[in-house]
Length: 343
Image 1 (cartoon, rainbow, N blue to C red):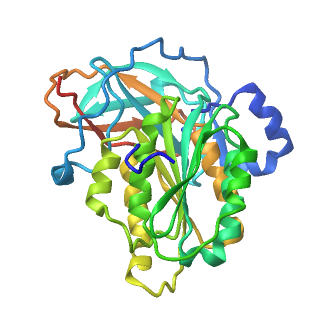
Image 2: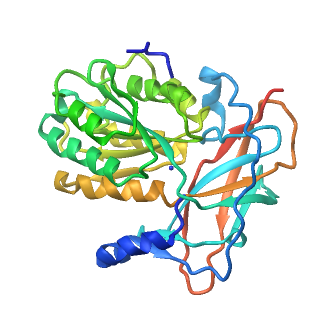
């Protein structure tokens, strides 16, 4: 196993409707498609360049909440998820439906994509003692997530209790992951923050541009070496989105478990992802499938910032959606900033 420190946009395509016919009732409840008057062009072969500057530790805690958005000298790329008031995904929006602001100044959108591009995904699986009664359902949910993903996606799995461990390295084989997950057991304490830090670092070996973590946990950390501040800074400086399935006990006996929902929600929000709370463990697989659909229904908006100063400073980013006539107000999920390059 490698050392510890090695460190999701699907607009409704024709093929998707074929699958949707078999599941029409469920899909109508979970997805809204806006029929566009015309199609926009996807972005060209924009150069990919500099990553975020090295993590800045405690100083990162003073910036506006958010996380690093991939940027080179010329282009900022912002992954965006849109939902309606019923929390259903909204697909089929056009470039003209969006506005992007950097430090309150509107930016011209130069690229717009909504393709089901493959993603490198890390599964962060809680195997601590508090997950004992939830283990089978959690394992089934992870397999559902993988089976409904883009066939070109790649996955790794990190299990954690007292410490994180790489259970399965990057692979696209559902069979391999299923076999490894069949051998895990729950017990001991919870090093959640260490596992997320490990997962973000592992993404340096990813082969796809888009990267995400799926965290399955009750969120109660009581064992990590890394602090919450250090992990939040790491997440903000990465280009990894975090989606979490939180299996929370309303009668959690320890302070760590009671703080679990807040911890997972903050880390997910920081990355531009989100937390899905599970009240009934029998619903975990449905939630996992919903997250998989969300990863495949993201828009990616690109713009060339008007301020090209290489000062390493935090740039606040806000994405606004202007719904077409007939649609209700929509909710935008996107990262809220990035660090400008230093050189």
